[in-house]
Image (cartoon, rainbow, N blue to C red):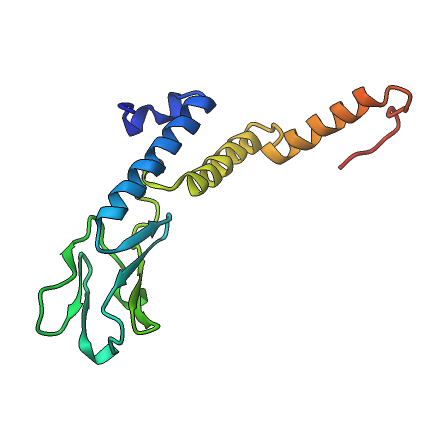
Length: 172
């Protein structure tokens, strides 16, 4: 879709679902072409870089810098190398060699709030949007999304059971 990230908030729920699906498909295609896999959340980025089977930790050259990342085998061209778009906390970022065939890299972001909602995967974005909505509702003295769901469920139950008297019921 050609909708910018700034316009995302203006989309209907159906348009958001369609856009999220298209974004996930595009991301899957992009990731399939990369020599590594990655996943991002508000506070962190996780990357998995395949290496030749039987690789040992001492065979690797992994560089985690504030704005730089490089992974490769010693004496060879890096499998991946480049500048990061945001600074990371080097002292809290780690890498491990898993099953002697994959390097798992965990990067802790410095500015965890500098991530745009459109940068997040659909599930994380939905969770953040729900938290933002609930916070707005609380500030206005209105019910949160969970409270609205409960109220809707109660209304449906009452409509399905008109023979029951709910006038003295206390529901929390």
